[in-house]
Image 1 (tube, rainbow, N blue to C red):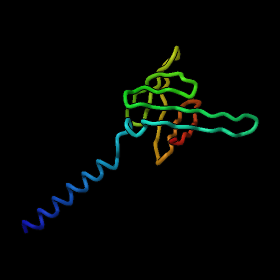
Image 2: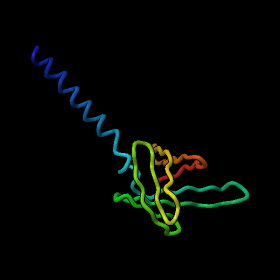
Image 3: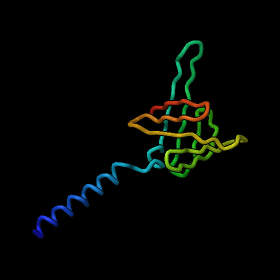
Image 4: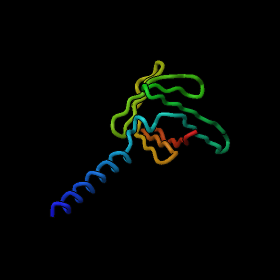
Length: 109
């Protein structure tokens, strides 16, 4: 009986550790370079965002700012603009940002 209880406890601990590691930290998952492309006619443009682990980001034009993450919400602060908050989701190599007038999908570079 003791072996069975010990086995069950070990399985539960291993599962808890696996789930905890698989979930990941959204703040570290966003770190890196991301790119989006819009090739719809009549315009073509590319945007780039690079996030560092210290809460800073830079865009493709060299403009930089800071970001903070709370749950699935990311708040950007840069230049003379008011802070901008959006919902984000990372799935594989895709970063999706959605807000009032924002629908953006970026791919990890």
